[in-house]
Image (cartoon, rainbow, N blue to C red; front, side, top):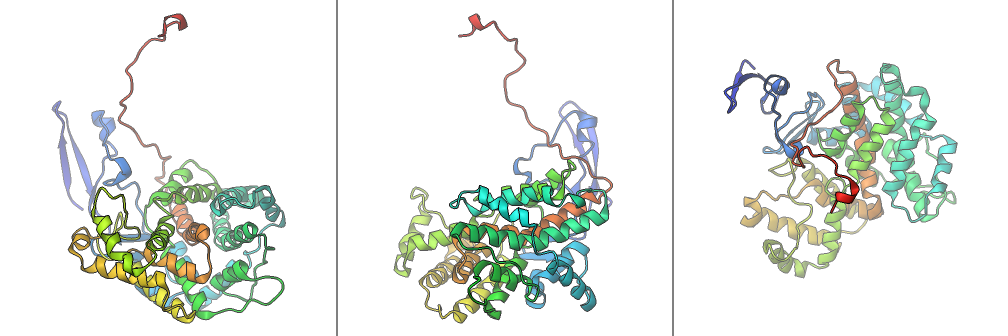
Length: 430
C-alpha cells in the first residue's frame, strides 16, 4: 500500500503515518512512532479499531459472513476435512497430503495419554468444582510435568508442546467430567479417531465396550473444526499477550482458558440453551419476542448477533445442519428445544426488528443444542470450546514467537486519577 496519512495535532505538530495493506481486509496505518514523535497516544477501548499484530492464520469478513483458515473457507473445511487435518493446516499453513496426515494423526494419537501423576492432581479439587476451574488448574500444571519442552526459542520444543496440548486436552477435559460425576477415568484408545476417542473417554465405562456412532462422532468433530480458531478474539489476544513476556506455552494456554471462561466469550452457547429452556414452549415465543423488543423488560435474545459478524455466521449454517443430523439420528426430531430454536430463527430472519439490527443466529445458538443431544452437560460446554480452540491458540502463539519483530505487549492508558499530591501526616487526615 503506497499511502501516507498525515496527522496534524492542535499544537501544530504533524506526523506522517505509513499505510499497510494485508492480503484481504481493511488497510491499516502504522502508529508505532506516534508517541515518540508527538508525545500522544491513541485511545481505543476494546481495541475495536486497532490491529495489534500481523497474522496469516485466520481471516474474518464480518459484513460478508466469511471465515477462512489459511485461506480455505470454513464451509469447505467442515465438509471435506476432519479436525486433525484442520489442526495440521493451522499449525503448518497447508493441508496435509495423505502421508503427512497419517504421520500427523499417528503422532497426536501417541501423545493422548497424560502423566499418571497428573491424574492424581484431580483429587485436590472438590467434586462439585466447575469443570473449567479444574481444566484451568490442570493445564497450568502441565508445565510441571512436561518441562522438557519449555524452551520457547527452540523450534523442536515448540512443536512438541503443540502436539502435547492438542493431544492431551481431550483426555484432560474428559477426566474433568468423569471426576465431577464420580466415575473412573477412561484411558485413551489408539484405535479411535480424535473425536471418537474423546467421546469414548467422556461416555465410556470400564464395565462395557464403548460403541462408536459415526453420526455423533462426525458432529463432535465438526464442533471442534468450527471452533478451532477465530482471529484475534479476547482469549487469543490473551495468549499472545502472555506469550510476549516469554511465558511457557502451557501457561499461555491456561491464560487463554481463563479468558474463555468469561460468559461474554466462551459461555454464549450455554446462555443460548438456558434461554430456550426458560422459554419452555413454542407457544411462548411470541411473548418472549415482545419482551426482547421492550428495552425495559430485561429480556435478552442469546445466540443471535456477533461482535464481528454483521451477516449470517457461516458456522451457524453448518452447525444447523449438524443439529438436524444428530437429532434425527437420536430420534429427537420432535425435540421441544429444537422446535423453539427453529421458531426463534424464523422470526429473527423475517422480523424487521432483528433483520435491521443484523441479529442473525450465530454458531452458539445451535452448538448448545447439539452438545445437549450428545449428552454433554451444560457445565462442560466451555471446556469443549477450550479443547477445540487450543490448536488456534498454540498456532497463534507459535506465529508470534517466531516473529523476529515481537515485543512484549505493553498497552498504554488515558490516566484520569488524582494529580501529584503530598502525603499528609496521619493526624491531619480527615
